[in-house]
Length: 554
Ligand SMILES: [Zn+2]
Image 1 (cartoon, rainbow, N blue to C red):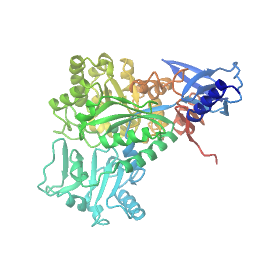
Image 2 (image 1 turned 90 degrees about the horizontal axis):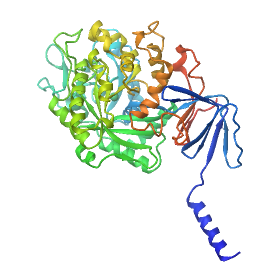
Image 3 (image 1 turned 30 degrees about the horizontal axis):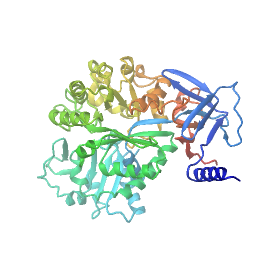
């Protein structure tokens, strides 16, 4: 062996020991679908090398044979681009998996019972926390009170968040720890609900929730990482390959940074920094961030203009139909809102503002209209989160301003019974109005707002297409003219959600050069009966060319 050859061999050996060789994988025998703009393409096999797609094969093309390629038989499963939830709350979802689950309770008594059962199984916690009650779905439709909790929890503080996260239910111990008395004032943008004697009942709305929550020990970053991982793995099992986390603080962002640096992220996260949260200005001055593998992206902020409809916190121009004299809550005055948005836009961040009531939406669009011009940031694709109740004249403003409507179809099917009570028959025509927005050329990024709703994207696709809940109610669909087609619904959960995160060049569809983010499904999304769309099951989830979830075979 001559010297050069020895040297070459040594180099090759050292290279191969430090750099993994590229791995090419083919998944064949699939019913594959992807979108290009609004056109649906079909394929029967997908080839990718490491994280990137090389090629899609159609029926009559032969798959080349290479001994070092990994060939996987898809066994006829449906293959779709990975689904993207443009608005969810990963840490709260993770916590909801570890707290008392009050979703679906039908009475206050049942909610209390579930909390008691949870407490029996979680004896080491110093606070009993839970989430998911919704008095609108209870027979008497009225808010619960501290008293029913006090009976079982005289000495342990209890704090139970409403399903929408916009109200909390405390027991007397939790209120005592917070020093809440008859004389405690409601903070601005919040409300302490009181009985006829002026005594706080235990219900705290929006900004008033912090009065109680400040006493619950904050999670450490390592606790957060464990919860985030649990949540992300659960989200991957539902077919989500990417999630936009709608409003996190610096510690939560730090936890994601660490997970990303440790290569532990099973799905992509687009983090929105919540404004105002501790040190937000400082974080914005550091600028936007993309990890090398694009698993973690931080280029947006979340601001909240108003509350939610269920708790009558959504800011309306006119009175609530079921509460005269009440117009909801704006969380910031217009000057403060403008200042947050202006600072974020100037720092080069996409601004995603929560607006549910028609007044909040109008104000946010007005502020965007002004500031997009003065900061010249139309290209940052600012968003309105929820865009739930719109005056008809505000609908065309989304496409005019290049503002994305980030909407959650399952909110419509969950709210349908309550929404008309709250806003009446006229204003409802601009509510959850995704067809009117699409007709006005708006881009809709779909999501679920988990844990407010289930993160299962098939529930959202089903609601988008049918305007029905999972019991297929109401017949024909609720305001059926607002339905989306299957292609439109898929686009809102893939390409347009990717666009809303500035990632449509990377994800959202399956094309050579894009990321290998896709899912294999039990049922064919395009041929399954409408009523069964929500029942689809994810068999495999692949992100960045790596299988991150596989359904256990029974
Ligand atoms: Zn949200």
